[in-house]
Amino acid sequence: MSKYLSIFLLLLWFNSCNQCNKSNDVVVPPAKEVVVNAPAFNADSAYYFTQRQVDFGPRNMNSKGHEECAKWLIEKAKNYADTVFVQQFDATGFDGTKLKSTNIIASFNPTAANRILLCAHWDTRPWADQDTKDRDKPILAASDGASGVAVLLEVARALQSQKLQNIGVDVFFIDAEDYGYSSALADIVKNVVNTENSFCLGSQYWSKHLHTPGYRADFGILLDMVGARNAVFTREGTSAFNAGWVQDKVWSNAAKLGYASMFSNQNTAPITDDHYYINGIAKIPTVDIIQFDASTASGFAPYWHTHNDNMSIIDKNTLDAVGKVVLYTVYQYEAEKVVQ
Image (cartoon, rainbow, N blue to C red; front, top):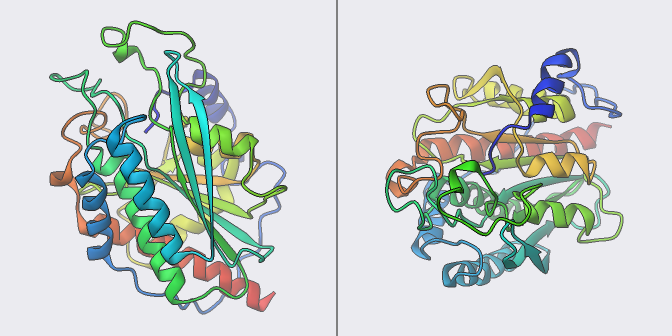
Protein backbone atom coordinates (compact mmCIF):
# COMPACT_ATOMS: atom_id res chain seq x y z
CA MET A 1 0.00 0.00 0.00
CA SER A 2 1.38 3.38 -0.90
CA LYS A 3 1.89 5.58 1.41
CA TYR A 4 2.97 8.96 2.33
CA LEU A 5 0.63 11.91 2.08
CA SER A 6 1.05 14.44 -0.66
CA ILE A 7 1.35 17.89 0.89
CA PHE A 8 -0.35 19.38 -2.13
CA LEU A 9 -3.27 16.97 -1.84
CA LEU A 10 -3.54 17.59 1.87
CA LEU A 11 -3.84 21.34 1.40
CA LEU A 12 -6.19 20.89 -1.52
CA TRP A 13 -8.42 18.63 0.54
CA PHE A 14 -8.68 20.96 3.50
CA ASN A 15 -9.23 24.00 1.28
CA SER A 16 -11.85 22.24 -0.82
CA CYS A 17 -14.00 20.47 1.75
CA ASN A 18 -17.09 22.00 0.23
CA GLN A 19 -16.38 19.88 -2.84
CA CYS A 20 -15.88 16.62 -1.00
CA ASN A 21 -19.35 15.30 -1.80
CA LYS A 22 -19.14 15.66 -5.54
CA SER A 23 -16.73 14.70 -8.27
CA ASN A 24 -15.25 17.33 -10.56
CA ASP A 25 -17.07 17.47 -13.91
CA VAL A 26 -19.26 14.51 -12.95
CA VAL A 27 -23.04 14.67 -12.92
CA VAL A 28 -24.15 12.87 -9.78
CA PRO A 29 -26.75 10.24 -10.71
CA PRO A 30 -30.06 10.70 -8.91
CA ALA A 31 -30.84 8.26 -6.13
CA LYS A 32 -33.24 5.51 -7.12
CA GLU A 33 -35.25 3.16 -4.97
CA VAL A 34 -34.57 -0.27 -6.42
CA VAL A 35 -34.77 -3.85 -5.30
CA VAL A 36 -31.24 -5.21 -5.03
CA ASN A 37 -30.78 -8.94 -5.58
CA ALA A 38 -27.10 -9.54 -4.94
CA PRO A 39 -25.64 -13.06 -4.90
CA ALA A 40 -24.16 -14.46 -1.73
CA PHE A 41 -20.61 -13.62 -0.72
CA ASN A 42 -18.67 -16.51 0.81
CA ALA A 43 -16.24 -15.29 3.47
CA ASP A 44 -14.69 -18.75 3.80
CA SER A 45 -13.81 -18.62 0.13
CA ALA A 46 -12.32 -15.13 0.48
CA TYR A 47 -10.25 -16.33 3.45
CA TYR A 48 -9.01 -19.29 1.42
CA PHE A 49 -8.02 -17.00 -1.45
CA THR A 50 -6.08 -14.86 1.01
CA GLN A 51 -4.27 -17.89 2.40
CA ARG A 52 -3.60 -19.22 -1.10
CA GLN A 53 -1.72 -16.06 -2.04
CA VAL A 54 0.26 -16.03 1.20
CA ASP A 55 1.23 -19.64 0.51
CA PHE A 56 3.24 -18.41 -2.47
CA GLY A 57 5.36 -16.49 0.01
CA PRO A 58 6.20 -12.83 -0.63
CA ARG A 59 4.97 -11.74 -4.07
CA ASN A 60 7.43 -8.89 -4.45
CA MET A 61 8.52 -7.88 -7.93
CA ASN A 62 10.81 -10.25 -9.89
CA SER A 63 10.51 -12.99 -7.25
CA LYS A 64 9.49 -16.62 -7.68
CA GLY A 65 6.40 -16.02 -5.55
CA HIS A 66 5.39 -13.12 -7.79
CA GLU A 67 5.77 -15.25 -10.92
CA GLU A 68 3.79 -18.17 -9.50
CA CYS A 69 1.03 -15.97 -8.13
CA ALA A 70 0.63 -14.25 -11.51
CA LYS A 71 0.01 -17.59 -13.21
CA TRP A 72 -2.52 -18.56 -10.54
CA LEU A 73 -4.37 -15.25 -10.76
CA ILE A 74 -4.62 -15.45 -14.54
CA GLU A 75 -5.98 -19.00 -14.27
CA LYS A 76 -8.56 -17.97 -11.66
CA ALA A 77 -9.60 -14.96 -13.74
CA LYS A 78 -10.12 -17.17 -16.79
CA ASN A 79 -12.21 -19.58 -14.70
CA TYR A 80 -14.65 -16.82 -13.76
CA ALA A 81 -14.65 -14.00 -16.31
CA ASP A 82 -16.01 -13.70 -19.84
CA THR A 83 -12.78 -12.15 -21.10
CA VAL A 84 -9.35 -11.73 -19.51
CA PHE A 85 -6.78 -9.14 -20.53
CA VAL A 86 -3.16 -9.55 -19.46
CA GLN A 87 -0.87 -6.51 -19.64
CA GLN A 88 2.80 -7.46 -19.40
CA PHE A 89 5.23 -4.58 -19.20
CA ASP A 90 8.53 -3.51 -17.71
CA ALA A 91 8.29 -0.80 -15.09
CA THR A 92 11.30 1.01 -13.67
CA GLY A 93 11.68 1.17 -9.91
CA PHE A 94 12.97 4.19 -8.03
CA ASP A 95 16.34 2.43 -7.79
CA GLY A 96 16.54 1.74 -11.52
CA THR A 97 15.50 -1.91 -11.23
CA LYS A 98 13.51 -3.26 -14.17
CA LEU A 99 10.32 -4.73 -12.75
CA LYS A 100 8.64 -7.46 -14.81
CA SER A 101 5.02 -6.48 -14.27
CA THR A 102 1.65 -8.05 -15.02
CA ASN A 103 -1.71 -6.29 -14.83
CA ILE A 104 -4.69 -8.64 -15.04
CA ILE A 105 -8.18 -7.45 -16.01
CA ALA A 106 -11.10 -9.88 -15.73
CA SER A 107 -14.06 -8.55 -17.69
CA PHE A 108 -17.71 -9.48 -17.12
CA ASN A 109 -20.35 -8.64 -19.74
CA PRO A 110 -17.63 -6.88 -21.77
CA THR A 111 -19.99 -5.32 -24.36
CA ALA A 112 -22.04 -3.37 -21.79
CA ALA A 113 -21.65 0.39 -22.06
CA ASN A 114 -22.18 1.10 -18.35
CA ARG A 115 -19.30 -0.38 -16.34
CA ILE A 116 -17.83 -0.58 -12.85
CA LEU A 117 -14.09 -0.94 -12.25
CA LEU A 118 -13.10 -3.00 -9.19
CA CYS A 119 -9.41 -2.91 -8.23
CA ALA A 120 -6.82 -4.29 -5.83
CA HIS A 121 -3.04 -4.61 -6.04
CA TRP A 122 -1.54 -8.08 -5.89
CA ASP A 123 2.19 -7.44 -5.53
CA THR A 124 3.80 -7.13 -2.10
CA ARG A 125 6.32 -4.87 -0.38
CA PRO A 126 9.95 -6.01 -0.93
CA TRP A 127 11.02 -4.57 2.43
CA ALA A 128 9.64 -4.51 5.97
CA ASP A 129 10.72 -0.89 6.25
CA GLN A 130 8.28 -0.09 9.08
CA ASP A 131 9.45 -3.03 11.20
CA THR A 132 12.16 -3.18 13.86
CA LYS A 133 13.78 -6.38 12.59
CA ASP A 134 14.53 -8.00 9.22
CA ARG A 135 13.68 -4.68 7.60
CA ASP A 136 15.51 -5.58 4.40
CA LYS A 137 13.38 -8.69 3.82
CA PRO A 138 10.06 -8.92 1.91
CA ILE A 139 6.75 -9.31 3.73
CA LEU A 140 3.87 -11.75 3.28
CA ALA A 141 1.31 -8.93 3.01
CA ALA A 142 -1.80 -10.88 3.96
CA SER A 143 -3.88 -7.71 4.30
CA ASP A 144 -1.85 -5.19 2.28
CA GLY A 145 -2.41 -6.89 -1.03
CA ALA A 146 -3.80 -10.40 -0.59
CA SER A 147 -7.04 -9.44 1.19
CA GLY A 148 -8.24 -7.06 -1.52
CA VAL A 149 -7.42 -9.56 -4.26
CA ALA A 150 -9.17 -12.32 -2.30
CA VAL A 151 -12.35 -10.30 -1.90
CA LEU A 152 -12.38 -9.52 -5.63
CA LEU A 153 -11.79 -13.16 -6.56
CA GLU A 154 -14.82 -14.11 -4.50
CA VAL A 155 -16.76 -11.23 -6.08
CA ALA A 156 -15.73 -12.61 -9.48
CA ARG A 157 -17.03 -16.05 -8.53
CA ALA A 158 -20.35 -14.45 -7.52
CA LEU A 159 -20.53 -12.46 -10.76
CA GLN A 160 -20.13 -15.70 -12.69
CA SER A 161 -22.94 -17.32 -10.71
CA GLN A 162 -25.42 -14.48 -11.32
CA LYS A 163 -24.82 -12.96 -14.72
CA LEU A 164 -25.08 -9.21 -15.22
CA GLN A 165 -27.48 -8.08 -17.94
CA ASN A 166 -27.43 -4.29 -17.85
CA ILE A 167 -23.92 -3.34 -16.78
CA GLY A 168 -20.41 -4.71 -17.05
CA VAL A 169 -17.72 -5.13 -14.42
CA ASP A 170 -13.96 -5.16 -14.85
CA VAL A 171 -11.96 -6.69 -12.01
CA PHE A 172 -8.46 -5.21 -12.15
CA PHE A 173 -5.59 -6.92 -10.33
CA ILE A 174 -2.90 -4.24 -10.26
CA ASP A 175 0.80 -5.02 -10.23
CA ALA A 176 3.87 -3.01 -9.16
CA GLU A 177 1.99 -0.96 -6.58
CA ASP A 178 4.23 -1.41 -3.55
CA TYR A 179 7.73 -0.95 -4.99
CA GLY A 180 7.92 2.68 -3.96
CA TYR A 181 10.36 4.84 -2.08
CA SER A 182 9.85 6.06 1.47
CA SER A 183 12.29 7.78 3.77
CA ALA A 184 12.29 4.61 5.92
CA LEU A 185 14.28 2.94 3.14
CA ALA A 186 17.24 5.31 3.48
CA ASP A 187 19.33 2.76 5.39
CA ILE A 188 18.14 -0.21 3.33
CA VAL A 189 18.34 0.84 -0.32
CA LYS A 190 21.38 2.86 -1.35
CA ASN A 191 20.81 3.23 -5.09
CA VAL A 192 18.05 5.84 -5.40
CA VAL A 193 17.53 7.20 -8.91
CA ASN A 194 14.06 8.77 -9.03
CA THR A 195 11.51 8.83 -6.20
CA GLU A 196 8.78 10.80 -7.99
CA ASN A 197 5.56 8.78 -8.45
CA SER A 198 7.46 5.65 -7.40
CA PHE A 199 4.42 3.87 -5.98
CA CYS A 200 1.47 2.54 -7.99
CA LEU A 201 3.42 1.83 -11.17
CA GLY A 202 0.85 -0.66 -12.45
CA SER A 203 -2.09 1.71 -12.19
CA GLN A 204 -0.02 4.48 -13.74
CA TYR A 205 0.81 2.22 -16.69
CA TRP A 206 -2.78 1.03 -17.13
CA SER A 207 -4.17 4.56 -16.91
CA LYS A 208 -1.92 5.54 -19.84
CA HIS A 209 -2.35 2.24 -21.75
CA LEU A 210 -5.96 1.18 -21.23
CA HIS A 211 -6.59 -2.51 -21.85
CA THR A 212 -9.14 -1.65 -24.53
CA PRO A 213 -9.00 1.56 -26.62
CA GLY A 214 -11.26 4.26 -25.21
CA TYR A 215 -12.14 2.22 -22.14
CA ARG A 216 -14.52 3.96 -19.75
CA ALA A 217 -16.13 2.99 -16.47
CA ASP A 218 -18.88 4.92 -14.72
CA PHE A 219 -17.02 4.59 -11.44
CA GLY A 220 -14.45 2.49 -9.64
CA ILE A 221 -13.81 0.96 -6.21
CA LEU A 222 -10.30 0.19 -4.98
CA LEU A 223 -9.71 -2.26 -2.12
CA ASP A 224 -6.52 -1.98 -0.08
CA MET A 225 -5.87 -3.49 3.35
CA VAL A 226 -9.40 -4.85 3.75
CA GLY A 227 -8.80 -8.04 5.72
CA ALA A 228 -7.63 -7.20 9.23
CA ARG A 229 -9.54 -7.76 12.44
CA ASN A 230 -11.49 -4.72 13.69
CA ALA A 231 -10.66 -2.69 10.59
CA VAL A 232 -12.28 0.71 10.15
CA PHE A 233 -12.69 2.34 6.73
CA THR A 234 -13.03 6.12 6.74
CA ARG A 235 -13.97 8.64 4.07
CA GLU A 236 -10.48 9.17 2.68
CA GLY A 237 -9.80 12.57 1.14
CA THR A 238 -8.61 11.71 -2.38
CA SER A 239 -11.75 9.62 -2.83
CA ALA A 240 -14.01 12.33 -1.42
CA PHE A 241 -12.56 15.04 -3.63
CA ASN A 242 -12.61 13.09 -6.89
CA ALA A 243 -15.53 10.73 -6.42
CA GLY A 244 -17.68 11.98 -3.57
CA TRP A 245 -20.90 10.63 -5.03
CA VAL A 246 -19.36 7.16 -5.32
CA GLN A 247 -18.18 7.35 -1.72
CA ASP A 248 -21.69 8.38 -0.65
CA LYS A 249 -23.15 5.40 -2.50
CA VAL A 250 -20.73 2.85 -1.06
CA TRP A 251 -20.85 4.13 2.52
CA SER A 252 -24.66 4.39 2.39
CA ASN A 253 -24.83 0.80 1.20
CA ALA A 254 -22.54 -0.29 4.02
CA ALA A 255 -24.92 1.32 6.52
CA LYS A 256 -27.92 -0.41 4.90
CA LEU A 257 -26.16 -3.75 5.33
CA GLY A 258 -25.37 -3.10 8.99
CA TYR A 259 -21.71 -2.09 8.69
CA ALA A 260 -21.93 1.58 9.67
CA SER A 261 -19.41 1.15 12.47
CA MET A 262 -16.87 -0.40 10.11
CA PHE A 263 -17.50 2.12 7.31
CA SER A 264 -17.08 5.27 9.35
CA ASN A 265 -18.28 8.67 8.16
CA GLN A 266 -15.13 10.27 9.59
CA ASN A 267 -13.32 12.37 6.99
CA THR A 268 -9.61 11.60 6.86
CA ALA A 269 -6.74 13.13 4.91
CA PRO A 270 -6.04 12.18 1.30
CA ILE A 271 -3.51 9.51 0.44
CA THR A 272 -1.70 8.53 -2.73
CA ASP A 273 -2.86 5.07 -3.73
CA ASP A 274 -3.83 3.46 -7.05
CA HIS A 275 -7.06 5.45 -7.15
CA TYR A 276 -5.06 8.70 -7.26
CA TYR A 277 -3.78 7.83 -10.73
CA ILE A 278 -7.01 6.22 -11.95
CA ASN A 279 -8.83 9.43 -11.03
CA GLY A 280 -6.13 11.76 -12.30
CA ILE A 281 -5.03 10.05 -15.52
CA ALA A 282 -7.84 7.70 -16.57
CA LYS A 283 -10.49 10.17 -15.29
CA ILE A 284 -12.60 7.41 -13.74
CA PRO A 285 -14.14 8.52 -10.40
CA THR A 286 -12.74 5.93 -8.02
CA VAL A 287 -12.86 5.53 -4.25
CA ASP A 288 -10.48 3.71 -1.94
CA ILE A 289 -11.78 1.37 0.75
CA ILE A 290 -8.70 1.29 2.95
CA GLN A 291 -8.13 0.69 6.64
CA PHE A 292 -7.45 3.76 8.76
CA ASP A 293 -5.92 3.68 12.22
CA ALA A 294 -5.88 6.87 14.29
CA SER A 295 -3.46 5.36 16.80
CA THR A 296 -0.47 5.42 14.42
CA ALA A 297 1.48 8.36 13.04
CA SER A 298 1.03 7.12 9.48
CA GLY A 299 -2.73 6.58 9.77
CA PHE A 300 -2.19 3.03 8.56
CA ALA A 301 -2.57 -0.06 10.73
CA PRO A 302 0.34 -1.13 12.96
CA TYR A 303 1.03 -4.16 10.73
CA TRP A 304 1.60 -1.94 7.67
CA HIS A 305 4.87 -2.76 5.91
CA THR A 306 5.95 -5.11 8.71
CA HIS A 307 6.28 -8.87 9.07
CA ASN A 308 3.18 -8.81 11.26
CA ASP A 309 1.11 -8.52 8.08
CA ASN A 310 0.44 -12.25 8.01
CA MET A 311 -2.55 -14.56 8.27
CA SER A 312 -2.80 -14.10 12.05
CA ILE A 313 -4.40 -10.67 11.53
CA ILE A 314 -6.92 -11.74 8.89
CA ASP A 315 -10.56 -11.85 9.95
CA LYS A 316 -13.39 -13.43 7.95
CA ASN A 317 -15.84 -10.86 9.33
CA THR A 318 -13.92 -8.00 7.73
CA LEU A 319 -13.58 -9.82 4.40
CA ASP A 320 -17.29 -10.64 4.54
CA ALA A 321 -18.38 -7.06 5.18
CA VAL A 322 -16.26 -5.58 2.41
CA GLY A 323 -17.28 -8.25 -0.07
CA LYS A 324 -20.98 -7.85 0.66
CA VAL A 325 -20.79 -4.06 0.33
CA VAL A 326 -19.02 -4.34 -3.03
CA LEU A 327 -21.45 -6.94 -4.38
CA TYR A 328 -24.46 -4.95 -3.16
CA THR A 329 -23.13 -1.83 -4.90
CA VAL A 330 -22.62 -3.72 -8.16
CA TYR A 331 -26.09 -5.25 -8.23
CA GLN A 332 -27.68 -2.04 -7.04
CA TYR A 333 -26.20 -0.34 -10.12
CA GLU A 334 -27.45 -3.22 -12.25
CA ALA A 335 -30.97 -2.69 -10.85
CA GLU A 336 -30.77 1.08 -11.31
CA LYS A 337 -30.13 0.63 -15.02
CA VAL A 338 -33.32 -1.44 -15.34
CA VAL A 339 -35.52 1.40 -14.10
CA GLN A 340 -33.86 4.14 -16.15
